Length: 92
Picture (cartoon, rainbow, N blue to C red):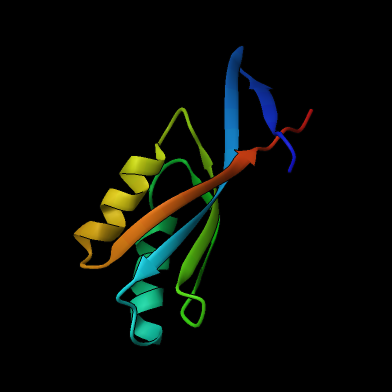
């Protein structure tokens, strides 16, 4: 685990890594829809959705979006999302 803190325009940006278990994905289109939807949301970076493991892994900016918002987006797409935060990432 590592922390990522970036000072940008006198504003502290906290980026965290999160893994989310996703139930209800049945094909490559399911994982692609989730990945494309989240990739277009402000504050989400480096997202990867894995159909076989039924999970998503991403880095997000906690000032822009929360884990509850992320799981809400996935749930709104018709899947069941459960989070398991891994910690804060830090970079100077």
